[in-house]
Amino acid sequence: MDLLVNVDVDDLERAIRFYVSALGLRIGRRFGADAVEMLGASAPIYLLVKASGTAASTKTSQPRNYRRHWTPVHLDFVVEDIEDAVQRALSAGATLERPVLVHKWGRIALMADPFGHGFCLIEFLGRGYDEIAD
Image (cartoon, rainbow, N blue to C red; front, side, top):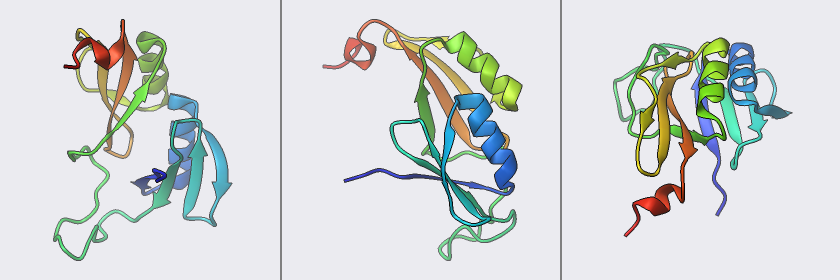
């Protein structure tokens, strides 16, 4: 099974600039004016244009908005140097939502992209998650 990641945005060119500048992704393929494939992560990320205010689903009355919002699903990007990665993301327009936290398994920065989507930058330490695995 393959995993594809889709991220709704209201401005495709702005989103491309952010994900290239902040995370070092690159354009794979374009799909007309409303979608682009971004490569460079372990799974392709598709940026999809969806207008603000449109229905996200027929099962919810909640419209799309691109202010900071919460969802239980988010993206984690594993990086080699968290300070460098945070500065790069901030320079590209991300928001750091709290100082970098240190855990037994590694360091984590909780962030948001310019479209309100939460994401984390993670720098593993030692054996990474194996440090806390049973």
